[in-house]
Image 1 (cartoon, rainbow, N blue to C red):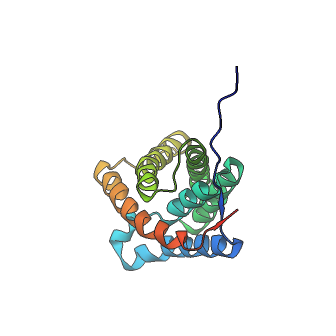
Image 2: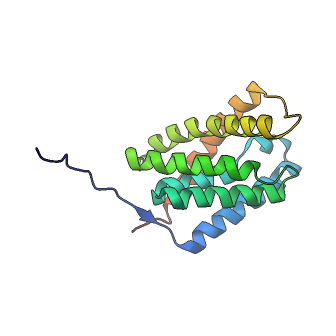
Image 3: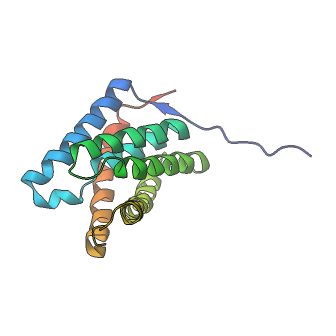
Length: 170
């Protein structure tokens, strides 16, 4: 019996400078934009950067490390406990990379569908971590979570298109 033919996995690379600038800008926007625009608290730029680079690189170890690093930097810039965002974004990086290996996610709609799935998973993982690790976790707000999904999917549409211009084949 012959082994099933495997489809070739197309891996893309971005220049390391593009990755670091994107992460830096995402963290700056996440930190300072809600101070000027209160509705910007729904945006999650670091999450979208983690999803994008995990999907593009298709490497679970890289995606988990990137998610952990981005999350820890986000923790350091926020007023919360260190490690909560790091653990949640590590999970999202791993899931995004795993999905990109299993499914073809080069299409914009496929990436947006993945983002629409991973944003609530991120919210629920944050809620579970806060509930398990903190004495008094913040209350779950369904309307904010639903709005966050819609806003981040729309923001992902723009952000992914911009970042796609910097891709090159591996």
